[in-house]
Image (cartoon, rainbow over the protein chains, first blue to last red):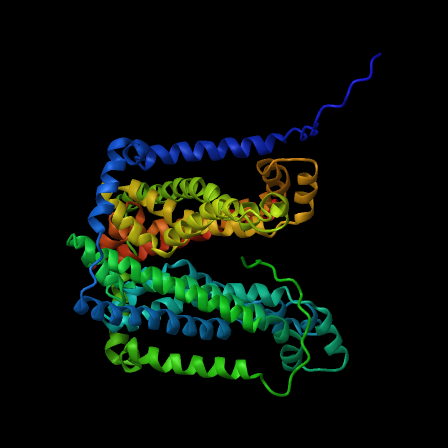
Length: 285
Length: 289
């Protein structure tokens, strides 16, 4: 038999996928089709020649941006407000998260190494506290910022302060959950070592747990600040201060040149915060 | 991107004195807090006033019992399903936008790193040609994601009319920007050795990507996309505030009519929906990674 050169590249065929995988893909495809009908989606309206022409016309109407001095002054005030909302909101959220997280992470609240010799009655009380803290964090987190904003506008009135509270409360829930995950995933060996030396719980926390967790806390906080600057920009839609109100007005009244200015300002603000956060991350972590 | 489960970090030896940078950082935080306090017109007396308390009590008293009549719940079924549909299709559109742009925006594929030492060394023009699509896709992704979804929704309501479809497009574009950026970061972070090995066999850049990068990146891509879908549910629930369909529209209407029992029910539905998605997506991600 003549020798045959091996084929240039024979990549072995992947093993056949399991039936459940196929069913999963089929379910996904079905869900997408269902959504396509349910949302009255019409790709032709967007990507067809007419849709594209309409879109291009709209983009052309946006130019040039309105750069008149009085508008820029007003926009600068709103931008400062937006920044302030994002900053204070994030700060407040850290306070809320830190206040709740020590009850909401299982290894600090009731389970594991620290509680091996605890009495059952106290354990039950601890479990209860843990459940309450988790539930509260879930509630704060699942209600979107904008709904919180409406509630706070109702409570303390129109203005950026409502935005601060709304961001703080919602993000407090998010950070609380993330912080709890960090605390639950710390390396247990330092804890054991400290316990072996006879350290009390607070000492274990201060010397065994927090040094491991703080860099992650800081990192998550910076990440949420990047998210929050974007959210702060829309708080004004419901009267909670910042650039959002101007955007809403500009779009509703067809002030397209102003709209472009506002979008550019948001872009600058978001990019600046992203860069600042990346810088801090590099320097501090 | 941040990993959801942190790896254990080395415990630093406690320093007796914080570094100058940390001191400057703390000082900066304090100054910014004071300035923001003033700019955001923080008014603690308003928060703790009897009036604020009265408003909350009035809301709570007005909101209970929540509206649970069969007619109202029946009315909610459609917007709730619509919200799920917007989030699903929106995430799919985001994937279609984010995946190709994310590939273009991956520096190690486009122009930098060991894959390009041979064919780009000493060829500035060719390097520039490779760099341009990279720079443009980065800029595009960054524009897509820095404009908030709610603003995209308003723009698309203008472009294609009221209803859930502008919501789909808003999620698609906004999340497309986020997915593209994160995908490119995932691609950058893969182990480069298989890529170089593939290149050594003479594989084209496309093949290096497809057989070297994608298999390594796939679980992370899917996991992050699922996480974004989870966020999309929340986002699409509020797009209705500007007329882009879903349950948000109903919240807006009930709020405007000061119908607090309905608002409480709607917040409850939203809560259940988000909690359900969280649980589902968590289970799917656990299976994947």
